Picture 1 (cartoon, rainbow, N blue to C red):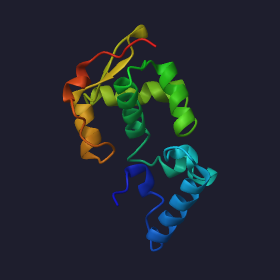
Picture 2: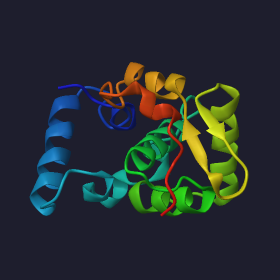
Picture 3: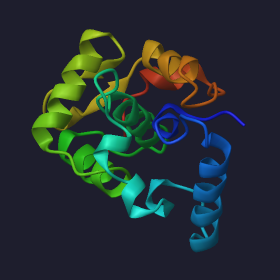
Length: 150
């Protein structure tokens, strides 16, 4: 089983497999829908479990933008913030802005002004694939498709 980066922090140490098994059993027992962060116990939905000096939420935000863009949803800061909080942990719009700027500097995103929102680049999709966050999409050209208005 491949473990994504956000789960890596809960799976280090000697009791790795037992701890992960317990978390997955808990999450699948209480959740009838697809497994998500919301199904995790509260103590695992804290920022400290996903954020460290090497990972400050950019991977989660990049994945969120990718998913929203593929679904034809808007990717403005406000909608990203609301969805990020719903899926992961509390974050401010300023933190979203900082993450977007960092991802833009690394050419993983195209950040547009106003309601145009943000678009993931082919390099951004490749970064998600390389880091094991997503599997390779069927159509890499979708990275250049602007997000639809919702």
